Image 1 (cartoon, each protein chain N blue to C red):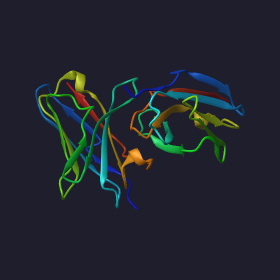
Image 2: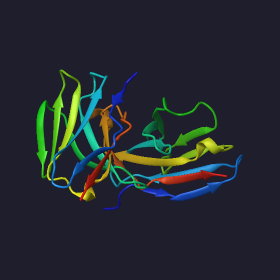
Image 3: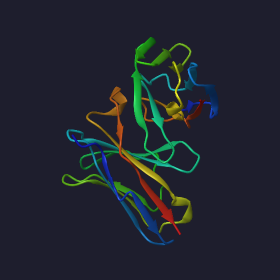
Image 4: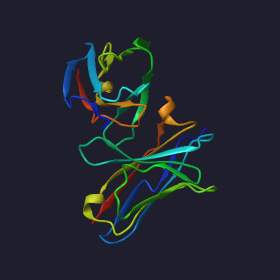
Length: 106
Length: 116
């Protein structure tokens, strides 16, 4: 069974703080990982993908991958209320986690 | 460059009727994926298709559901004899090459099916 696990949350952070979203996966065959953001009633939109161990930064977002620990995370710096959404983690095996709801309070 | 196009956006069907959901992939994309999202739940993979071929249908219910991606025209997800439990958002995604190679998939706006 190829599983991607995420804490459903909600994760509440104040505006300007760092939000840390985590994901673990069971399939060691997954080579790439993706973070999608989904607003309520909308479709998922891609934020970042990562396929190498270590960190990948894009603006306020940093994805981190640790293949040995089968762990991938997304850090959002300077969180804004507009970042409030559900964040979905997915592996290259097309399996999505259930998502973590992030709430950023002004 | 148009994104993944899905229609209808909203569909209401009575129990026992058929629902047909259509998806046109992004230009240049030949791989299509269908996902279902029940209220308050995550995305569940249903089926992966290339033109004229079903590659992986491991997530499709064994009965009443079928999918196709013909040589010409959009991919179609067909649900026969709908039941209330089929009410969900159905998302289509596409990629230029197989997602298992690490290629990103892009989602359409979704089709919301309500069975009354």
